[in-house]
Image (cartoon, rainbow, N blue to C red):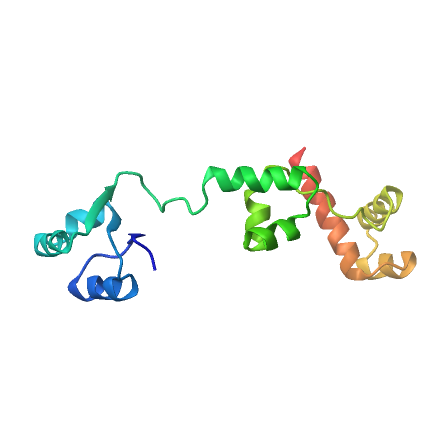
Length: 160
């Protein structure tokens, strides 16, 4: 229930009645220019008679859901040492939202289980024609991991 809502569907008599049922204290309807132009003058007049103002949003795209004040608060909390999970709980936000809105980059994940020497040995063996299955048996590393290391190295070499 809100006194101000944003609509992203064309205003029809049925949709207006749904909006009024869901929001009995409705005062303002915000809509994009394109929707306003397609709305019948009859509906606009009816809304005006109900003292519901229609604001045409000149900005393109969906309006921002989170304001700069909230983003600043999230970053202050994280910078003060509060974990993102606690920030999410305190501000009643989804944890993914907190991660999305925070300024700092995420910390790098755990380091590879296999050393750079082992990775290079895998690459050399593969370049010399050894099958992935034989590399796996020789080094006691799962086949899937061998493929992952080879794919990662291939991607890194392409970027250079």
